[in-house]
Length: 101
Image 1 (cartoon, rainbow, N blue to C red):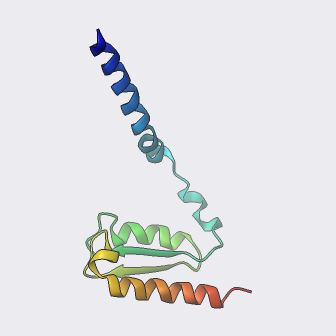
Image 2: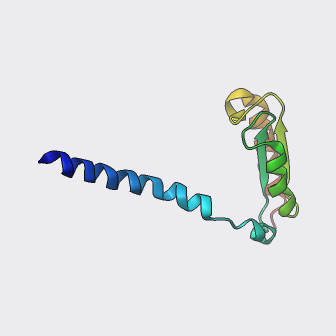
Image 3: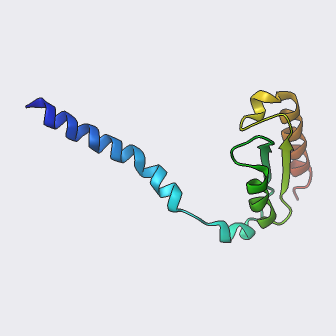
């Protein structure tokens, strides 16, 4: 008798866990990226699954945004090229902070 309840509970848990992923697949606000007025920095690795070409698509949509490709990295440049990653991030944050009114 416990088996159907356990199965039902497991299916309910799995459906709840999958909900954010299915929502993310259907949620697309790319057409509104041009509305972003905050400084934006796009980072990706040369061998990233989120390819430099795909990343550049979003970068082009935000006026004044910046993009950096880490030539020796895949999806984790903060692990694969940590010194360069920190240098890029610190430089961007410094420039943003000094340009604030």
